[in-house]
Amino acid sequence: MPDISFIHPDGRVEGFEAPAGISLMQAASGFGIAGIVAECGGSAMCATCHVYVDPAWVDKLPAPLSNELELLECTASERLGNSRLSCQIRLSDALQGLVVRLPERQ
Ligand code: FES
Image 1 (cartoon, protein in one colour):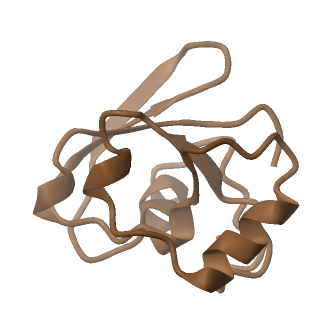
Image 2 (cartoon, rainbow, N blue to C red):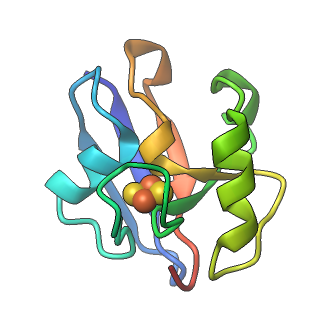
């Protein structure tokens, strides 16, 4: 059960334990994290689950697939090198301690 932390644009941090096997977006929605909209429900069609992965974790995540990379062109907040769609990040014990930042807008 990995510990996950979300850092809001105002610097506020919300952390929780999430079960392995679900997506980061599902975990965030389940814990009521404001800032993850997830309009498409995780189908990689909306880009409203955009997060910035903490630099220490970027290389520990599986690389994004082509559909995720394409959709990252459509984020409401600036796309950065560490931008990911949280619905495409599957939680595992290897992600214990994962830290992501929320964008200003989705
Ligand atoms: S929830 Fe729509 S792209 Fe992630």
